[in-house]
Amino acid sequence: MEFWFSEFHTPDVKHSIRVNKQLYSKQSDYQRIDIFETPEFGRVLTLDGNVMLTERDEFIYDEMIVHVPMAVHKQAKDIIIIGAGPGGIFSAYELVQQNPDLKIAVFEAGHPLEKRHCPIDGDKIKSCINCKSCSIMSGFGGAGAFSDGKYNITNAFGGTLYEYIGKNQAIDLMKYVDDINMKFGGEGTKLYSTAGTSFKKLCMQNKLTLLDASVRHLGTDINFIVLENLYAELKDKVTFYFDTPVKTVEALDPGYRISCEDASYECDQCIISVGRSGSKWMEQICKDLDINTKSNRVDIGVRVELPAVIFSHLTDELYESKIVYRTEKFEDAVRTFCMNPHGIVVNENTNGIVTVNGHSYEGADKQTENTNFALLVAKHFSEPFKDSNGYGESIARLSNMLGGGVIVQRFGDLVRGRRSNAKRIAEGMVEPTLAATPGDLSLVLPKRILDGIIEMIYALDKIAPGTANDDTLLYGVEVKFYNMEVELDEHLESCHKGLYIIGDGSGVTHSLSHASASGVYVARKIAEAE
Image (cartoon, rainbow, N blue to C red; front, side, top):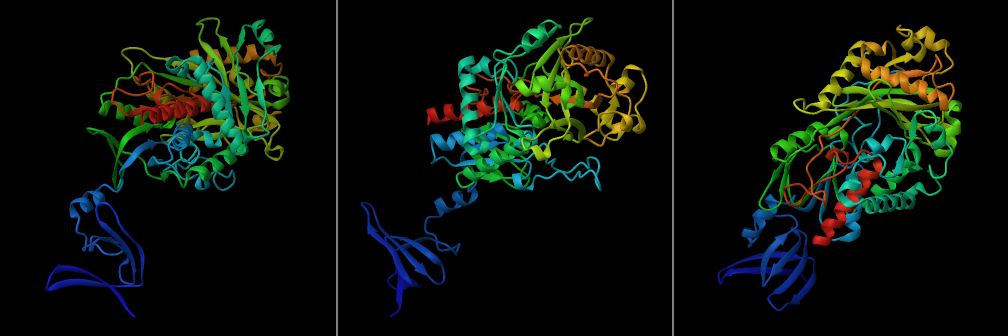
């Protein structure tokens, strides 16, 4: 026996649909609800005997006043997060923990984690080919995905988050992030600490300052596993849009509209977490939305590579030592940054400019005989100059112009005022881990910055003899671009209600741990207000 549903329009007109089976039927306080499975239209919802919607047609709906807006605004979300770096990931994670019913979307200019592969193989492709989306800098996990995976738990460096939320809360949030990393694959990795170390006294005796910190070293390999597990946890609870750069952010009344290449999306609240690589984009957004920014900075320097044994007494105990030196003549601060014991030197592509960075691995099979770290000089600019990133870019472009990318030079050649060549580097005791162009960094870096770096190398030689060896390699340039510090309140909320700006793109944080903590903090503030 066939089963048909009929919708009567007039006594003389009806519309009938053959039914496979009735899935649901109930009389509510307001109307009769029926759901049918049909061969023609799939599932059909009817109210009081009238077809409301079906799976397959576009013309039988009675409630067009509802259907049209829903069709137009299918992209509507409670919260949109721009950027899938550590700030974006941990804000999404915490929002899901606090309120699983929230509709959350994350927009990322780069690729999903599994598709992030740099084409440089050292054989067929030896240098950066300027991919449309740099897999080292963009994608799920942000620039930190292929970093050394160091999470520094400290207020001594890594940003000024504590100025907004308090020192104790900042540390507590960093510890919370550390616990999550352990839960999602980081268990068994070592937490290093400067507490009680004798190196602090040694540094002081040689006009150096060792900054206090606890350091969780995941390594590039374990960090990748943690990110894989975090994505697996979030992918069914959060909508991710990869390879979807956001062009503009528009303030509505209320809410926000973000526009991408092919579509626009609306949300009640928006979290921007674009990292250092999004600094230019962030500056434009601040202009568009009349958000005030403060004076800015850029860090410029080189990456040092030397035999791991020279720094082993420091790295074995502390793993990463953040050491600051003030130069004799100008009292400029020169600091170590991103120390990678038994690591490798790598290229980075920021806005089409090739710079240098360093990675290391937890697994012994991927470790090298070298240790690398950056020596950076922070340049702070005041009126009338406003483009610190442009200044850093001009120096990096000069390096790219002279060397076709990154330049490498022996320390001995630098202090003797001569260009390095392939022969002298090959004959040295340090085997380069990055195929860079032998050259002369004195033609690239400003003299004041270069003089400060040379002073710092001689100072480090007193606590780690061998640092100032002729064969020590210097790669240039390393540039850390920062966004102009965005004017935010104590909740990291901009002058526009419901628009939060977090992570390194805000200028407030400068590290994985601080960026992640800022994401958790904002997520909790949003959840509290729900």
